[in-house]
Length: 304
Image 1 (spheres, one colour):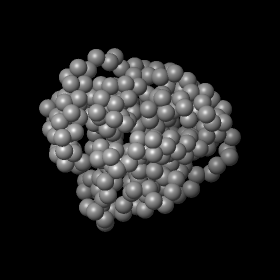
Image 2: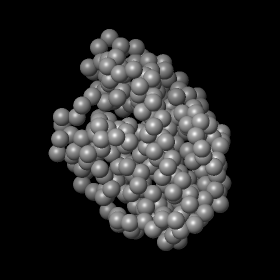
Image 3: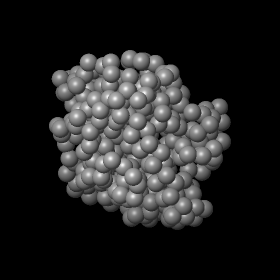
Image 4: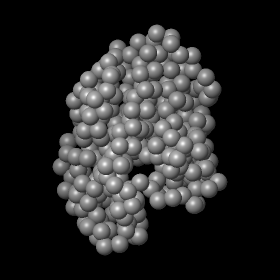
């Protein structure tokens, strides 16, 4: 908890008077944690699709208003308000036997420094080779291809596929707010800082957030047509706050519904061989240099 508060103080040091209110809110809802997380590894699924930073209400609105072959499903309570907390709670604390039956395909750069990936039955860090400097993130395509390869070749009975969307920056235009690795020190304000300082409206950021979810759901449809998984679940590691309780983004150790309430949509997947994955590296890969991990986390808006 102390480390969470220190991180909060650092991230809010330029936010002016409103920083006091946000810091107080983070502290209060960190100390006042009362949610009971729903089990994840103990739940019944063959493939778990993790949509990074996806709120349950946004998922319900997008799916309910679109043409999808599944409904929005229910909700679940996440054990975390950040990816590192989720990785630690779900995979880091699991038994060796449980992890030996899981292949984890991920676009999230925190994976290499948060969990012991050697305990997994299969692991592919797609962000190591699928990163797009122009967008400042990893688009969904390389993750989908890697997951299809894993689904067809890995011996494990369970597959976790971790997409970076709808987490900002956006991936649906050429002006996504991302930066190349060489230029990360000159990174523009994150969307959360823009909201804090009133330089962007919540409605505008919300529309981009929904569109980012729509983009990744297009790839999820491809994934579900190219992997056999009778019990497929779409969920998220955590949500995002758009000013609720004076909180923006997804700070660690904070227990509010905007951050802890995530989708839990049960559906199916069947390999119809509509896609042959291209590029990438199959199988396990070693963690990349720590400085590169830091750079890529910076592009995603994290303070490292």
